[in-house]
Length: 95
Length: 95
Image (cartoon, rainbow over all chains, first blue to last red; front, side, top):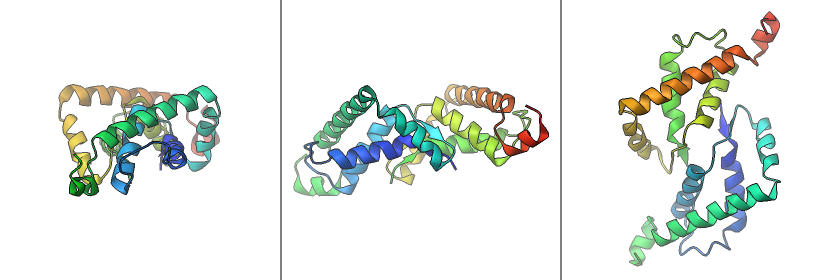
């Protein structure tokens, strides 16, 4: 089994910043769309077991790496917020 | 839940070509190391559900995309084969 360590890092970041992203909708669908979009924009870091995820996480102690990831998260949140694909937003007719 | 569609595509390719890769060892560890290495070298294609994996797979009907992926697979197989990290190869003292 292989794991993209970025999944854990981005998930943690998304959970920490969700209030600050100013999204119109933060339902499960919109959250997953932001998650997938960010993961498509960052270099994947696949490792072959869970223990090795820590080595990748260690890179993100570096402030510049983390800031760059936060910027990508904010950009993707804006894209999803401006173009929501969830049922909730379709119902509201906000699109 | 999000899925990197490339995981399925690369896994299928690895299974199809394993005989032709000429690796010294094709134990589970070496196989996973090739898998992780290839996934780190290709653009991730995260989708938010299994049904959407088909859209990504459709791109790989294109011969050029598939050839480029096969080349990456062969390169990564050579790296792992030349530098095996598995217990089996350590025991054999082939390193």
